[in-house]
Length: 255
Image (tube, rainbow, N blue to C red; front, side, top):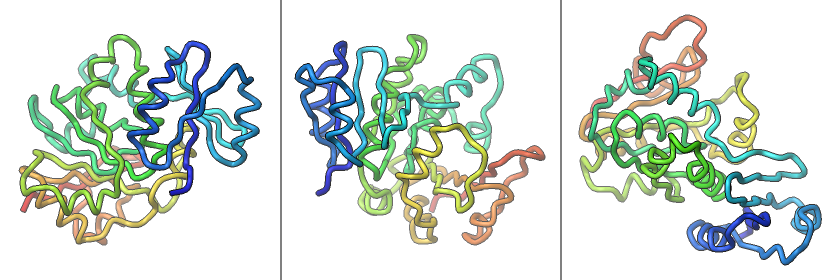
C-alpha cells in the first residue's frame, strides 16, 4: 500500500503516539525526527503529507501548506449547544441521551462530536482516508480541557463505509449518519479544502442507504447541499431549513 501520510514528532511530542497511529491506520508510517529540522523532514517527504505531533497541538503539512489539527467549526457548535441552542443535526435526528450513533462518513469528526455531546454515549466514526482518520484522531485528542471527555467518546476506524456497513449486524446502532461529499464546493473554512482533497467523492447510492437503514434501529440522517438534489435522487424528502442555510437533511426510517 502506498504511503498516504508520514507522522513524526515535535520536541514536545510522544513517539509512541506516532507509532500507534502508524499501526492503527493503513498507509501511515512513523518517522523518527532524530534532531532533524522540520523543513528537512517535509522536503524529504516530497509530495507525501507530514503530520507533526506535539503535546498540545498537531500540524499537518501538505505540499508546504499547514493545517492545524482541530475539529473546525464543530467546537463552536458545542459551545452553542451548552448555551441552549439545538444543533440542526441533533434536532433532525432527534438524538437522545444514551443512544448509539454511527457516523459512516466521518471526515473531520464534527458531526460525531456533536452527536457525542447530545447522547453522552460512544460514537463510532468510519473514515476511508488514512490521512483524515489520523488527523481527526489527533484533533479529538487535543480539544480544550472542557471538550476532552467528548473527544474520548468518538472512536475512529479506517475503512470504506460501504464495506463496513455491509458487515455490521442488523439494528446495531440507534442512528446512522451519512454525509457524502457534496458535488459542488461551497464557501467553507480552510480545513474543508483538506477534506475535499482526500475524501471519497463517490455519490451515495440506494444500496448503501439501504444497508444503513438495516444497521439502524431508528433511522438514518442524510446530509446534502441545499436544496437537496442528491436527497431527492435517493427518494428522500429534504427537511425544511432556514433560508440561506447551505445544507439540508433528510430522514430515512430504519428497515
